[in-house]
Image (cartoon, rainbow, N blue to C red; front, side, top):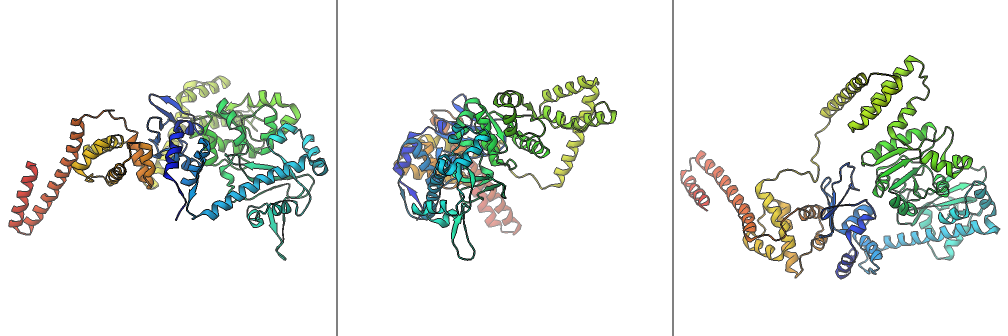
Length: 596
């Protein structure tokens, strides 16, 4: 038996939370008419196709097809199970969620112990840092590096003392199972005798938290010269590096307020930038930006400023991040760091005000940044270098989607080098055509493009009638009863047939029309998506009897037409066999069907 949640509790939570408020914590919603729209957090898009209905308490993306109620959204966005989604929303609503069943309970218990232990260790390391008896050396080091007491407290920076068993004993005294913390890389085991000991010793400890503010990992930096300089806990069942942005949990309110986020490479940059007044900073922790991290960045902000190191590796990483973020339809800028400096170094040397104004405040569009970058190592007074630079810039301009953008940078190039704008436009178009031709050739060689879920297209009349009927049935039990008496489950589309059967069963339980509650009863993800898409259709509030009868007639008529076509094939087969008696009987059936 799996973990279950009492249905009464589910209904109570669903009635207590507003789907618009919940989804609004993750994406920027804008009201259009009766519904709210946003760029979909589940796939890359430039035009908002993600819709939230406050009336029906459901969401649906017309681009990728994902949809459902508030529980579905939390499951999808957080990557958690249904009971976990119920529990999370229960916390928001202040409702206790008792669970029934025991399958996976051990796994859930282990996770709860891990999160609890990681939080205790965060406080333990932080307390050691602030205690003069143990953390003076580490605290002096941090102060020398410019870390303030307020920042140390906000980010809960700690210190692992130079002991082989400080953390081990700390966990043992609280009866926490040591093997669990060995598995997540906080403790280690000696090969020859199996003794467990501390993996982090004499290191400054930076807690890494997930989007919910739970400590899931640690990054440790040495105070002396021992190697490695940085030691991080490895990926585990609670820590997936590519899904987490350092500082996101504490920066999220400022990101939403400013509608802007600053992306750094490392946690030290985030902390120092916070001290400089930039409270909307996060870090990808030295990794190449992933799709999951890009989604986190774009959920609450229209503008993303990338502020990576000024070296070649940092610049290339910034370009890769900008390319990934481009598909999310946000404004992307890159902050230009002076050569040889990272954000931490710059703030140390020039102070927070200059960093805030001259670096972050002076960030450039990706194209403007690239134009400056492409000049590096070239002598603009040399004709060969100058022509090579112009060619490289034109290649970049040809990748821009907006005609206004292309025109802006072409004019800038023409003014800078006193060139003909028409000549530049002609050359840029030639580059564009060559690139498009290559893409076209490559596309022909590749496999066919698969059907895109949620793609909108014209439906045959009988299928459109089925969708209209189902939309009305979800909102009116009397219409559902009328349809059941008229056609039962004789819908021609398999998904429509299944949805009708579920609706009949839903109302048989004595339930009132409630789209979100009905969708909750559906276990099959494909059915959930189909139900959500149908529920989001614009239909008349009060369907006339004639309208419903017309839909039913269209469905029945199509069934009759299909029967006639099938019998016509059977008649021809009988005639081929020279079985004229059977052919005559089938013909009579066809005539009767046509009369009907």
